[in-house]
Amino acid sequence: MKSRLSNATIAQLPDTIAKPRYDRGVVTPGIVHLGVGAFHRAHQAAYVDACLADGDTQWGIVGVSLRSPDTRDALAPQDGLYTLAIRDSAGEQLQVIGSIQSMLVAPEDPAAVLAALTDPRTRVVTLTITEKAYLRAADGSLDENHPDIAHDLANSGSPKTAHGFLAESLARRRAAGTAPFTVLCCDNLPANGATLHRLLVAYAALRDARLTPEGDAAVNSSGPLAPHIADEVAFPSSMVDRIVPATIDADRARISVELGVEDAWPVMTEPFCQWVVEDRFPAGRPAWEKFGVTMVRDVGPFEDMKLRLLNGSHSGIAYLGLLSGHATVDRAFADPAIRKFVDALWAEAIPTLPEDAGLDTSAYTAELAQRFSNTALAHRTAQIANDGSQKLPQRVVASALARLEADLLPEHLSLVVAAWIAACETRGKSLPAGHFTDPLDASLSDLFARQLPIAQTVAAVFDLAGFAKGHDERQTLIEFVATHLVHLRKGGTTLAFAALGIQSEAT
Ligand code: CS2
Image (cartoon, rainbow, N blue to C red; front, side, top):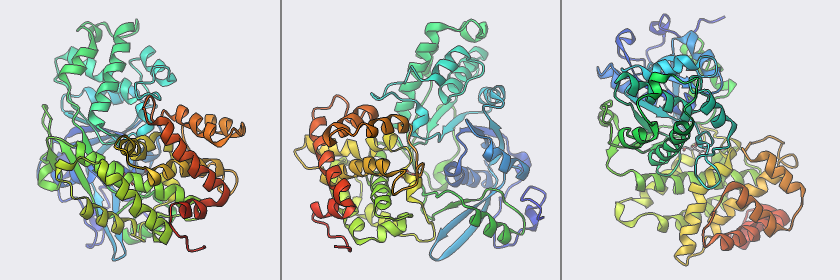
């Protein structure tokens, strides 16, 4: 058996492989990251690696998994080292990243996670926990009835959720006279910093209302936490962008051969990488701007552009691709009908973006077209299809509603919602059951089993997912979606595209 990638073996790697150009032994922890999955390892950890190489050694990352031990199990024997494989049709560049210093698994040792978050050296806490882990109810507010929220309110010293960890550690820091850390949300949510701020203040207010008897008196004696989090803790927003397909066994095998040592979990990505961050870090931050991060006053326009153009079309490609039999984004995007559809989708979404923010949408979409055509990535449509109920509001529903408000049609945007419903219905039939998953799966299959008329099915899906809740144009949007769903059920994507004037190759 080959030896593992680690501090001890790194020197023997071939010269063609980029390695950390700094002494990892002198790096101190400065960032705690919640949700240390592949995306974080391809994106933020790479930016931090560049800072450490530049001599700013106070920003090592403590990586926390809120759920599974898998990443820690793979990386702990490797001293946190892993390979980032940057791939396109020209080939593959390998870089070993060294910025993750240690890893914690929250369910195994919540006290250790709280200790890291309370460490005065921790000045920034970043998050990529996926949309659903923000625990929002259908109206966007904190889901107070979620069992994990109830658990954390009753067990503040051993929380499960990001909210529970952030609130308890901020309370402990305040009690100890340690300044709060800055919380930097890196998930694909609109106004992600402000959204997390609002949810955390709501969580802290629930906590204040019940001040748990088992809670530490000193922690709670400094007064209510909600106003402290509302007024004293900074939650800048950020837009993150890099396409990161899930690693497959063939990647592990190939990269281990190239390294000459085994890497249990390398990460695959594309050459493109972007991070736009609102510059509000009272406790200090790495000098990210030196390494390609764009620090701005207002991230909003960048977030909307990315969510509505990249992620919106990604979801469209995923669901329409799955319904057309395409397993990967590049294959779906090479399908002339899907390609035409995506161009029309972009044309619909662009007028909903702020006009005065200086966004260059034609350069952006031209670059997206190249990125989606990257055949070396094999980004699976099923991967993107996960969690549609959580993703679609900010990716397509918001722009569809904005168009309706402006008396414009959302014909293509609404097809993405219909394609999501159709793809959900198709699981267990022409698509394997469990091919992708959604937090609403149980309620959706109950609903589909009732075989209601299409318009009622769509309205019920809107209710379950909270799409367009309370919006004047809700009913109109439901009608657009229902019309598409009729076509999808009757004649698949060929008929749905034909109804939009898009000719499929098959016709
Ligand atoms: C994708 C994103 O899986 C998905 O939903 O749309 O993960 C996308 O690849 C990233 O946001 C790109 O930055």
